[in-house]
Length: 187
View (spheres, rainbow, N blue to C red):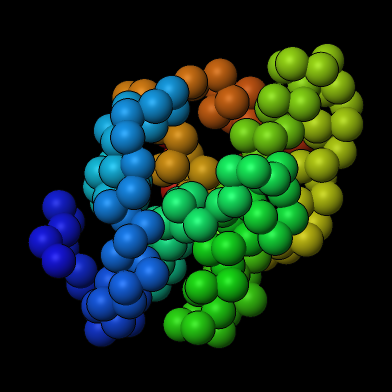
C-alpha cells in the first residue's frame, strides 16, 4: 500500500501492514471537519503538525502512533446505532491498538482523543460549559502525567484547514484559566 507519509519505525510498519488498519486509512470522503477525505490524508496533516513542534524523540514517536491509529477505525462504526461506547471509532481504535501498544497512557489517549471536542460541543450547543469543564478536569485526572501528551495531540489533530478552530480556542483558554503550562505548548 502506498501511503502519503513515511513510516519511521518497525512498530509503525507492523501497524500499517495490518489489513484492518489499511481499510481504515483508505476510508472517507470529504466531509465537514475532514475535507481531505480519506483518513490517510488527515494523518498527513496531523503528522505535519507534530513535526512542526520539535518535540523530544520519544514524545514524537508516541504522538505518531496515536496519529496513525486515532481515526483509522471510523469505517468500523455501525451507522445504524449511536456512535458511543464500543461503537465509537475511538473505542474501536483502542481495541485495535491494544494488539500493538502496551502503554496504558497511549491507549487512553487514543480512546479519549475526541473528548475535548465533545466537551466543547456540550458547552457550545447545550450551554453546559460548567459540565464541559468538569469533564476536562476528570480527563486531566485520568491521564495524569500523560495529559501533556494529550494536549499536544489534541492541537496537532485539531489545527487543520477543515476543522472548526473554536474547540481549539476554547481549550487553549480553558488551559490558561487553569494555569496549565508546558514547555512545548502546541499552537
